[in-house]
Length: 334
Image (tube, rainbow, N blue to C red; front, side, top):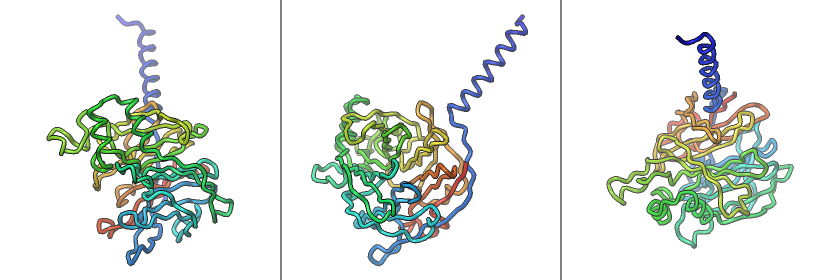
């Protein structure tokens, strides 16, 4: 017969485990404060909003836009927290990237990442990360360091995931066919550490385009996060594998008051299925049910406003699939 003390001990252990599990999974709730629309901009004779990255610098919001079909006119625009619904002005700044995919910031410096998706060695403008210091008035920047990152990312995968067949498929494939395609970038809250989120590849022995064989698929495996203590100096980045239900990372942001990341997931290939997850390093990602998220046509970026305990999730509004969009961002509180 079990003693009274054994029963009390068992219940204590059970309760402790419950609270540990709740903390590990990041039991976080977000409330919808607002749905809204950022303006469209003219590219040729077409009005569209090709948002691909966003960063907060002081009270300024820095937007990165692909710039129309095939990234013909990439732009960086500046707005403020209180003027997100109004037209943002173009930052007169040389943009080295051909394909802007993600942004983040540390203090008064913002970072712009290209997709890293091009296989050809001549495609340097698709392989860059740049450092840009924004002036106090937000009217100009001073370009700092830059680095070609594709080979560093691939070498990091090679070190941490020694699967030669998978690595060969990744190295020779275009981004949306299973090669490298980076679409997430975030400051981690730890000194100068920056995280990169890959839309592709996922890691699974059978991840790859079906042209490799009928057993291969682009929706198998875990997504990949890379962590760099100094993204301009480190030769190898650390990695973590995160289960996002067979999807890759489309956007991400570290939410400092919550100690974790909000991650937008999406398919490796072009698609209309997206997810939103909360992730703490060392724990599993938890898929969130956030009001208004499903109404975003193509969610692309997360912007944390930590002093207000608020988060924006922003999406594109371009192409025929977005013609009936009622909003291209949602504002959440927590």
